[in-house]
Image (cartoon, rainbow, N blue to C red; front, side, top):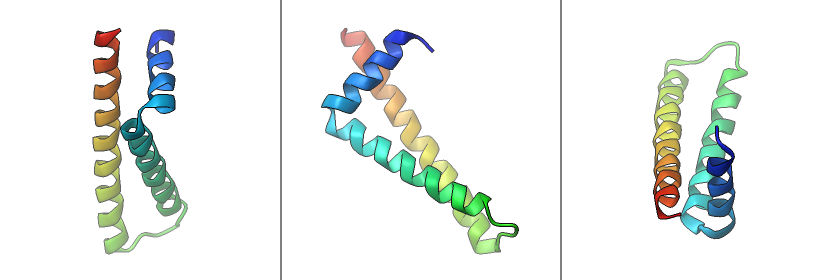
Length: 75
């Protein structure tokens, strides 16, 4: 990963409320997934929740990466 990309991410985190919100969501989904992963056994409902959380986390990551790419084009 380039230092330019990291710099853009840092700038977005510092100045873009939408990026900040997405980062918080991503972190929340990661925490929830970690909690599920720590369990020895998942119920069917928990397995469904795990899949849902993974999809949400990926969607948020994709949105964040799109914002990074757009910011790189502007700079």
